[in-house]
Image (tube, rainbow, N blue to C red; front, side, top):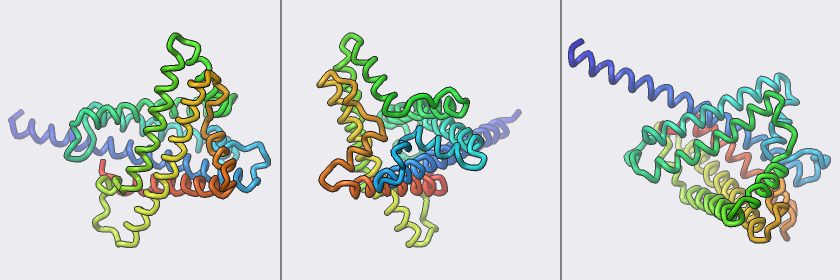
Length: 277
């Protein structure tokens, strides 16, 4: 094999690898978007008392909602597989670097590794539910149980507080980056009409701020649980969302955050179309 043939083979291999990563990224973003849309819709129902008290606006509630639809089992499996793709994509960014000029920065790789771990846990949870072994506990119960076990280990409250602080800070970062429209540099929409670009920016800003608010609030509750040495103070997504309805703004704040989560789901679908991978 000549040097030229070897070079061409290397380019083709890299191209195939890039194409595979793009497919994983887009499948993962579609799956993430579906989860956020369903969770947001469930939260709207909770805000206006249409859930009958039995629905939970979290991942478990969203999976139960999907399972009740035609071909629901297939749909839940598809979501789980999509989230596995999301995990592999983020893992590839941690190992090989993300798209963009700063792909080799250690901070970017570390953030990608953290996202891979997060989506790996979520994917395992969804696939366990699809297999019939993960639907016994709600997200709120799981949060309290994990917090209770973590607090009991040596130095547990400190570890739990650090984890909660990390989640809260992450939520603030998500909201700030969304408000600053940092996501624009990751989108390839130069050929799209201005109206489409504006609509996607609105989805990204409003949806990202709502998502960040949920993460920041959930992290704050974890810190409160650690400081008070009371695992019951930890809240999952459902309890965190319901807390918004207990503010002076009442159910309207919850409805606004819920609508924001739906918009973030739509934004994830837009990212699946136009994100640079």
